[in-house]
Image (cartoon, rainbow, N blue to C red; front, side, top):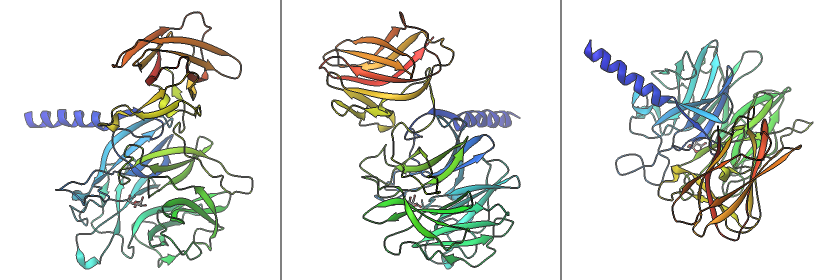
Length: 451
Ligand code: FUB
């Protein structure tokens, strides 16, 4: 009885941990590395099934290479607050996976008839299955698990980066990569192939292609994939009038990311807007096998072609004024005297700060929700070695309000609180711009509004 109670207590602590909520822009997750985001809408939330990069060391993985042991799932109903539901599949609990391979690469997850099918590649422990990666499935009744892995990987599939698409007629297809991009039909059980794999022929023949992701919009089937056209990966797409092609190479969705060799993505609509989920290496600029997932809005032209997406720091979603507004994730910045840097270069998970080191330097953060106007104070974490003066402008198309603040000189961070006096009630969605009024350097970690 006692053991049972202790176990229940530990489980409740664990589930609290698994439900940690973080509010973020780009990157979306800032307390761990995440890559290869497969985003899906289940119910009224977005779920992201990313890879989980960790750093290899002498006892795990291969130094200087990808090191991935397990998968977490994250969810959000507003694209701003992300819940980490904890580990859903881990290498040493999958019967067919070599338990110390650290090769749990890019996954995907789809729902069919109330069951959730999680597809993931890894290295098999049975060497008679051949060299390289196989792809397995784990099944759950909920998007967050518990996921039960199948005993064996899918027969007939060799490669990485599974992606599953269910067409309007109910036929499911699986896509994956191994140099080329392959596709096959899946049986209704979602666990076995229903047709022989085919190579999708009409794609670029020079340069690595991987990470296929197929979606349909207005009768056009978009096969999207990272491809090395030059020296590193960019996101491209080809279109067809059915899920197996022939496809016609059509364009580039996102250019190469300087400093990050890979990119890997998913594309989907959520609440009437299309989004591109992808990755870069924001939290690890010197090592691009420790990546971070991001999201930006995506739009189509009238003829169905995709408009190229420019990566932003601001990302997507509305930020509540009473949450920490990370102004270093700006939507616009002045060309002179404004920059960002890590708050603590020894602990990059602490995030970034905005540095305004010239008179008139500024940064703007859009889409902040002030609700019904009850917030009465502006609170900021600031630092200025020589002391400074800043101005905060809160505006929409109709009204602009200004708040001035002083930063005392010193080497330490200080919390500065300014009452919102002498200005009219601030309510609804606004943009915030912070400007330097002096020729001294002011650093801003975050800003928020309180009652
Ligand atoms: O995350 C490991 C590999 O890097 C993925 O499987 C590829 O798509 C690339 O993102």
